[in-house]
Image (cartoon, rainbow, N blue to C red; front, side, top):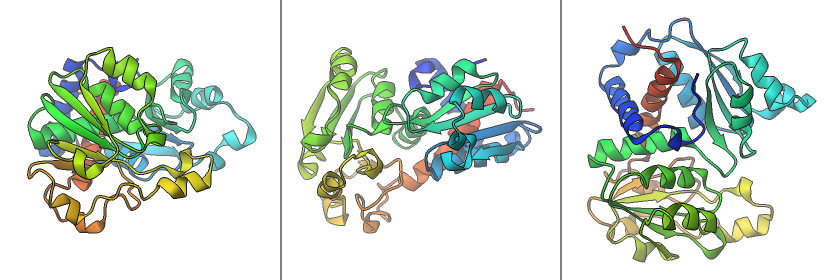
Length: 306
């Protein structure tokens, strides 16, 4: 039995195989329409989510499976004091596979250690978000044609952004990757990420607090929202929430082939007048998330389509 806690749980070859499967699902959905008949997915979401939870549910339903679970901690027995370990032991009696989101870092790992079914980390605090990373990799590979020799700008909340941390860890395994880190001083990428991940692996990067200047030369601009739920002080959040706003005017000065990605939800960091720009691919990115999660469920359940 295998779990997914981090994008590094899959080797580069395994990641490429999973992305190949996701592409096949995209182009031949009818092959997979009954691949999970009789299988059940449990979605245990202790933290609010729209895209991740619904894309997991859509993925399972697309393959003929069914879904059970909860969408907030208040609607589960955690409100009565039940531990993650006990919850997953019970869920293992009801479902074949589980996707868990939790505000505490490491909670899905605790669940995996006590689970009788595969557990997928659907986001744990500011730590990891591996299925979003797999979605991001599929988006980049499908639209750029490669995952190597790319310059990626990461903009916004780089301190708490689990999507950013996961994506960096995944991309450094490909040759020719360079990062441009765009953030205010208070939300810079943590030192442990720079020292233990980027420096240790000799990955070139530069830090910049100016979005306009940083965009030049980028292949990918990965925007993130300033996360209100990660702030202890409301005044700090209000002071920084509008610090980076990508609009049509800024896009007019961006490279013609630069893709704009965003894990969503956005607040106001990308204005709606950018949505019609062909370089804005964040809604297509959300669609790729369904194919990736279908491929992941099949892989962890070791299901082969007929």
